[in-house]
Image 1 (spheres, rainbow, N blue to C red):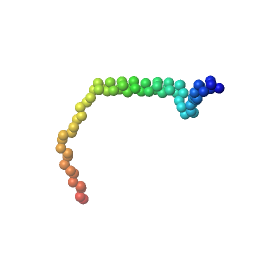
Image 2 (cartoon, rainbow, N blue to C red; image 1 turned 60 degrees about the vertical axis):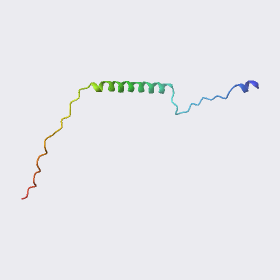
Image 3 (cartoon, rainbow, N blue to C red; image 1 turned 45 degrees about the vertical axis):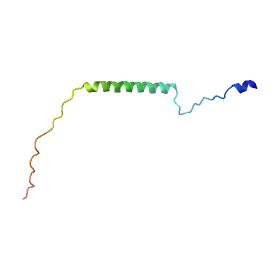
Image 4 (tube, one colour; image 1 turned 90 degrees about the vertical axis):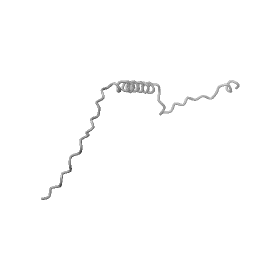
Length: 69
């Protein structure tokens, strides 16, 4: 009887929606791949050539009068 008092109540909560080890491993692999891809994009993007924006500074053409017939 005394031995039962020293054993704590322990229950593993494995719920149907809780992920198992395989799902966690796949998630970490996908997450690591995405972080690497976005990191490479962040490093490469500033070194891509940038073309200056051409702003049209010409005056707009004069309005065309509506034809009266």
